[in-house]
Length: 197
Image (cartoon, rainbow, N blue to C red; front, top):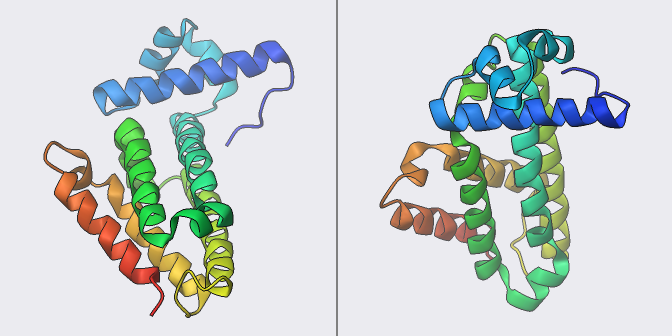
């Protein structure tokens, strides 16, 4: 991933290019640096001065998409919410917010995942964001178990299992028309994974 620019103007240009990359993939399902530059109102030379390669641009857009999902997930995984509402509505809310994020950036996520074996930049973003998600869920599970709201078990194993379930929601089967019953089943499965015995 490129180093983030330091001036307000360069940060704005960087942000505009990342936003355009996300929108371009949303519309077409592919990432064309030239189309992204045009959509953002910059020349391809400007784009390549910020992102040395197509994979660098993809990694930055992927990172931004995952950051948005993480920002939406974090408040759902608060102990206060769990204690006030219980695990079942929390599990439903968690699944819904992840589906919303993948609905918005599902094509981008699938494109990035298809590059994991070839792009070190995309793989680095994936590993970092995946570990952040596991860490967040591990802490949530540890605290929820201590509060008697979640089941006993190795928190890191349960967290990795939950992350695996949530990541599966980027599949078109969970995002297309008529996917409501599938999403409901995933919510119930996540609930059962962590429900107290």
